[in-house]
Image 1 (cartoon, rainbow, N blue to C red):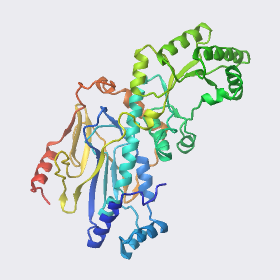
Image 2: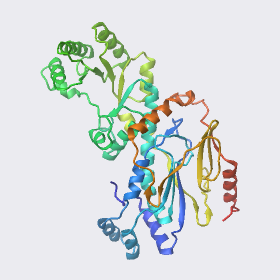
Image 3: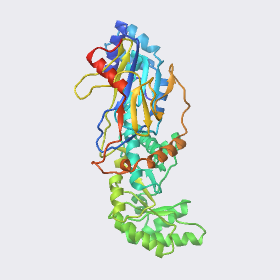
Image 4: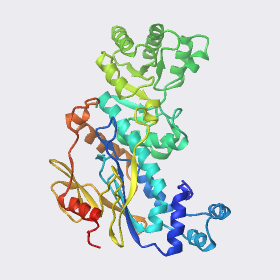
Length: 440
């Protein structure tokens, strides 16, 4: 569990000044992603469970307080306050796995100002990354198609242990079948998947011996056939498949990891069928992403499943998401940021998903459709139990493949964006707040 000191120093220096000056009345902050987001027609919201777990357990331990004391920035009164610090606020949020769009509030935090300020860094760190990876995974799935099996192969290239765990969970939430990350399987209940590496094949006197050993030792073998020569490796795999059939077993599949994957997959499929092995599946890996899978299929490639690693866990084409966390209301009334190009929407809000698109409104308004924001935490305690991740995954997959066609196309820059409107009442509040005439 992350420590309380996983926060930017300025969150603490601001909190200290609030504390010294008695500025700790209730404040409202919105977390949202600034538009536009390059290369993305939509986002898949993720990270809420991490946020709620963090908020419920947030504590400053003795060693944290000792370190802060050593900085010489804070007096004893503030350190004593932090010793008893607990998050006591309310949280409104979109459900994990929901399809969302830039500019829409994803999480709203309502809490004493010091509490709401201190948690900013962790919330942004978590939601930005998990939503980034879930959104990338969703695009990979759209490219692969609803019948393909796609698994996370990313941990060896992810940016640290925490990223590897979150990438596994976020990609599964978005609809992946599983992960190669065994620890993620243990922690989150995600199905774990593994084949073999080239080093395994190279550890035996020859490829056929390696394949026979692996097939003997594993109940559902998938053989990596491109360590030396792919087509020769295929013949060795066919020989092992026939030997397994004689024992009442079956070879599950073969994996391609290099070369002209589309051309090789066609030759492999044809040869497997010719050999009377139509049940042997083809699994493809090798620096894949949605663009490479799209091109693979366009070139006539055929595969049952895909292993996606580096370009998933690092979100290769979009390595960061511009989520922000902004003050929108406090005891003095609505608040607004007026910076050029970064003007915010003030007040407490709701997002309505209706037949004509989404509407960002004031919280008390009612619009056609369904509201996306619900209260998930009250006075520092969650109002919803931890989610069934498998059920979340199923709902996300259904929503993803039910998107309008123009949103499911990987590259179509000329297509119009999904309509996200701002209600007249919220626009009026923004206008009045910007001019300084909003009611207080």
